Amino acid sequence: MKELQAVNQQVILDFSEKKEEQRTAAGIIIPDTAKEKPRMAPVVSMAAIENAEIKPGDVVIFKQYSGTELKFEDKDYLIIPYADILAKVVETETI
Image (cartoon, rainbow, N blue to C red; front, side, top):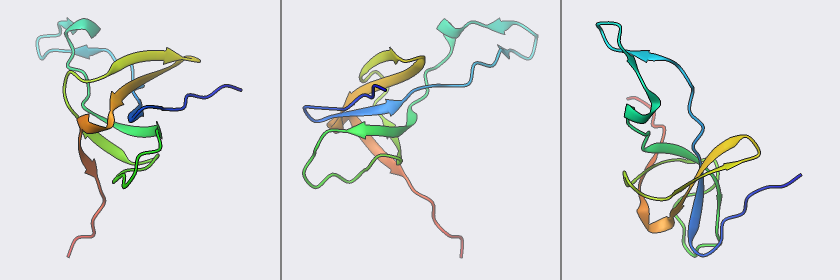
């Protein structure tokens, strides 16, 4: 079995999205090329980065036009520089 491992300050995100047909209120089908790409994804792998604030499994928000899309073993991934991660999504308890 093969797996992707990030190197050189890179982070690999799971960029698989659900392929659902989207329509406007009038019933017009929106093609994939016109859909806005998600800007949030879970971390799959990352390079050895000193004092990293994220880890594999975390869901992060990243810059809009960042990274390189890649298809590997029938899954879609996005490889981005660590510096392009803007925030980490965390669960908090309500008071």
